Image 1 (cartoon, rainbow, N blue to C red):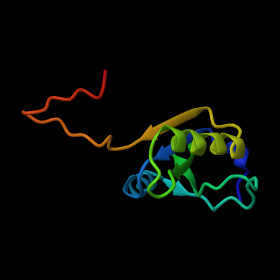
Image 2 (tube, rainbow, N blue to C red):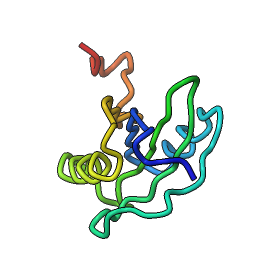
Image 3 (cartoon, helix red, strand yellow):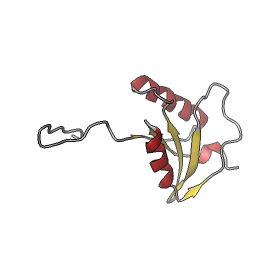
Length: 106
């Protein structure tokens, strides 16, 4: 079991399919953490991408939005205190088309 303080990148996924995709990016998967704070309800996937140790979590099933994402992030940084970069990666729920030009990235 690796120490929780070696993880420096946190990756939060909004839906389960994104969690599967995120897990496939891992070069190496680590064992589950032995012990987490009792108030942390997240389920984590731990691993390495290149030289970076990454902790991945998903929002609770059918709970979307800023509050859910903030709760997952808060618990993640409490359980993995050396996380310095946080990513919320997902499909965004929209696809631009010829009829509806949507610019999600500024």
